[in-house]
Length: 161
Ligand code: SME
Image: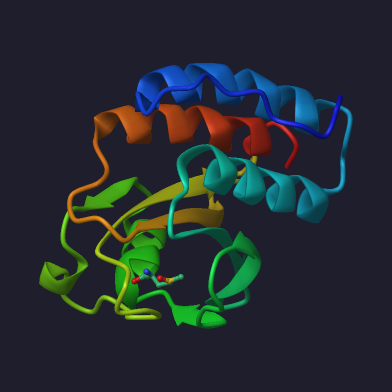
């Protein structure tokens, strides 16, 4: 797998996902190191869409701990009852937050972050092993299209857990 992404010259998000997701699949296919794969996935998503922040929080004991990410420095530990990440972990489902200021308990790592989507990653025993957190500096930047395609990205990780 070449270490270069080839993306269509479009802002159409679905077209970008259609091109990107098979390339992510090829990237992780030949690599079994989890951290290496999470790092490349975060980089690929940020490169393709220019999101403000893309990264993973991994469940470690009784907290979510910062894992591979792309973007500005972020809070390192999130309790299960805090933030969108904690809510996604606890509810075991994808959460789309159009305006983070309206989300009770949102953790403001950066005031530039306006909207976000968090997708849980399930371990083989169906517990949540980590969450994928994508933040945008644009209000209401995420839709069911992102939820659907990011779920496909997350499944590529789940196959390797
Ligand atoms: N937005 C997250 C916190 C982590 S950062 O934004 C990188 C949340 O409220 O769960």
